[in-house]
Length: 293
Image 1 (cartoon, rainbow, N blue to C red):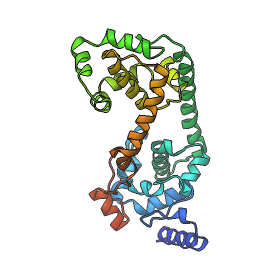
Image 2: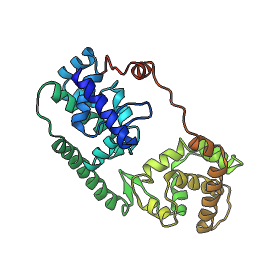
Image 3: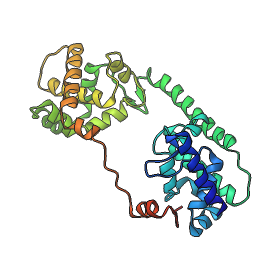
Image 4: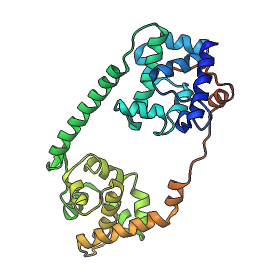
């Protein structure tokens, strides 16, 4: 009863001060720190959920599902709990880590064990930064390498055509040659040959071919692979073209296609929120009776 009254008191306080980032869109109070998370969870969780969290192995907390209240707390990066984690260097990209730390904190709380949020965040950020440094070092090597993981990396469109001529069999080449429209080609091969090109020629992770496109102000791997496919069709059909000019032209055409095509509607239409049965029950009762580990 005391905890419930405390939560209600905090809600009243936030309304008095107009802190709109303290209430979720579904009307749930958003904690300002990890201690308040524990307090609210203690009120929201049912006996079965508490029992599971209390006896859980630490590793199991990494894959927890059913703590719907955390979705309410961290739906966007403007809530005060999100800002609290931002100050601890855990951004929206670390959503899974944020959820894990909230669960871990409550696990320690219910077992009467100490928990240092600053220390735990530092462990996560140190590991993340170490991985980032390793990737940066690999990137520096890969952008100069003539091959990555044993696969030759083209330097420009001409060497790309030579490599595709070598890699693809005559049947696939003829299929490509028979396609009449550029965007039909992109649609057909984007997830097959296009994906192989993006993944194996370092258009995502870094390569000299990626740098080739970056130098020509093409930065998205999907656009790079589309340009490669369209130009390869022209190459197979014996068309003579200037690589620099065709890249500029296709950059504009692809941009217009994305701007005027169906993709615009798909990307920018706000999705309708569809809650699961258990989430709807939580919204109605303000209780979480069970979770999955």
